[in-house]
Length: 428
Ligand code: GDP
Ligand code: IMO
Ligand code: MG
Figure 1 (cartoon, helix red, strand yellow):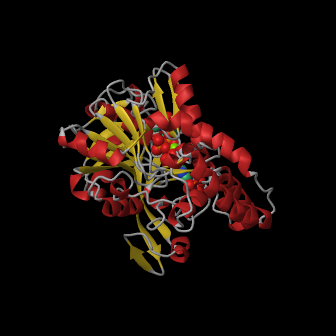
Figure 2 (tube, protein in one colour; figure 1 turned 60 degrees about the horizontal axis):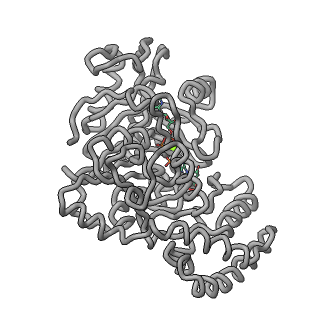
Figure 3 (cartoon, protein in one colour; figure 1 turned 90 degrees about the vertical axis):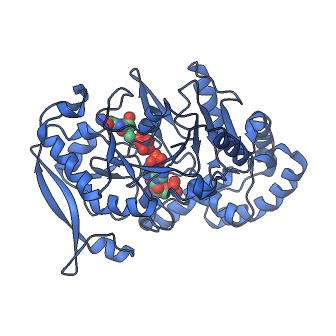
């Protein structure tokens, strides 16, 4: 097995970054393929916490090359800051170690302003975006008026196109009650960014192809989660990219038959940031408990995450949408100390039982979860070194998940640290 895609099976923040970091020990290339700095992937290594927004979570392993694919939208200011911060920590970030697609699109200052201004205008029907300009940047990419990173390295053509594009953006900004922007200021800054990033810009698809031919191991790191997918998520409460495994191909230029396995990351309960339906949400003390114990505050915006019980109907749908054949279960330790646990195994909908998610938003709001109740356990799982030593109640919780999902669990994460990980099966 040489190409693996790692995908969030819920609404993001499943612990993808931590699992990617653990798996990177045996991987040569770690590649982001969609999203932008709306992502926040947290790694804890020897008690030190790092949050990555754009750089793939393999960067802390010296043998691994990290790639930002063409499907990612890059805010150059954020990327440069991330590179510089890592360098200050003594982490090697050179053009040999980090490769960025010249085709990746650039988040511009007006994308951020438009994102914030539209959310403010929508007011109560807002999406709850991260405000990082992700949606407006993807809109421009699809509308063929975006800027690829490579365009920042051609000052004259960049200048002419920027003047034209900005005219329309300023019209929109004015309509939304936001201050217009001056092209000279954007131009100066972005040409500087272009100069900084130039050595990192390469033809990613070709590099991946050659690596694959040499038998190198590739890991494609998903951002967000299955139900934030623009097509298959809880639209319009989604992000603006396809977050599904299939997009690892379009977002990097690898062909579909080159992908060997898709691993789904499942948090032992469910969380969501921003607006939108959430059938198993707990708006009570239990939700509060999960938020505090699990540290469920956004890695990007610091917003409190909404918390609820594990929803297996949702995860089973993610398995179907992504061809997931392997799972990693995270944050099981957060459930220690609870007397009773609930898992959603179906939905009640208009007097019927449903075992897949509804396809319309209206029905999503109508469904009621059907729960199976299980006994909890008291032990601190972060201190446990093997699956066999887990409390029997935790084993039952895990078995129910595996049986319902008909998919094997390879890894169980029992704490934020790299070392808090129980390996049940070997991937490589
Ligand atoms: P990602 O976006 O999917 O990479 O997830 P985030 O980093 O946004 O959120 C996951 C949070 O849970 C981070 O603070 C991680 O450090 C933490 N985390 C990851 N795995 C575990 C785990 O097994 N147990 C606990 N307690 N925390 C974890
Ligand atoms: P990671 O990779 C959780 C959510 C936002 C909002 C919606 C749209 O860390 O799992 P956007 O700024 O993308 O237009 O916001 O998507 N969202 C995330 N939620 N984890 C993420 O990334 C997210 N990225 C975007 O909260 O509801
Ligand atoms: Mg996150």
